[in-house]
Length: 94
Length: 153
Image (cartoon, rainbow over all chains, first blue to last red; front, top):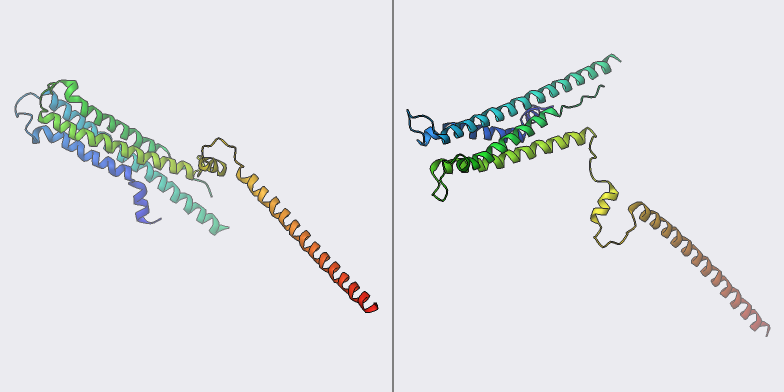
């Protein structure tokens, strides 16, 4: 299996979209301060709390989705490689 | 060689994450009205615009990610043989048939009909050629007899 093929298995198109959503989460978290809708030194307004919370949810969920997918896909690849190696050894010994 | 079954959990994780993100996008769209920081009937405040402009793409892209993971899951299930690789021939023919309500002949029966018809056509052709040969032989015999009788006369 080539490196490109392995990378495609580890990072499918769905994970790329999840990464976009991760970036969106970062924007949501900083947007009340970047757009100065949240005055500095004041208690957070309802919109700031909501936007920052949803941004954090986006960051955590998308990152978890990417990492867990990559971990499980890597485990599959390793199992496949081990099985192939074992089969090669069996054919060489017989 | 031992067969390795790929885990389906990775696709399920991706699908669940995408669904959660899609719901978050939906909440972002609704939040300004639900939490009351967007007054009804007034122009949208900048928070509302930001939440709406972010929530719509988040919901849409999360659904796209869900579709990607779901398609990958279906592909893996097909490769493992759990799902059929494609439509069965009879199903495909039923899908292609016009909705006239007429019962058309299914594919295997049609091929048998073709075979029977071709056998019948071959038998008819052989019979016709045999008859022609017999007819030409009779004609030649008759012409010989006529010429002989003329000579005798």
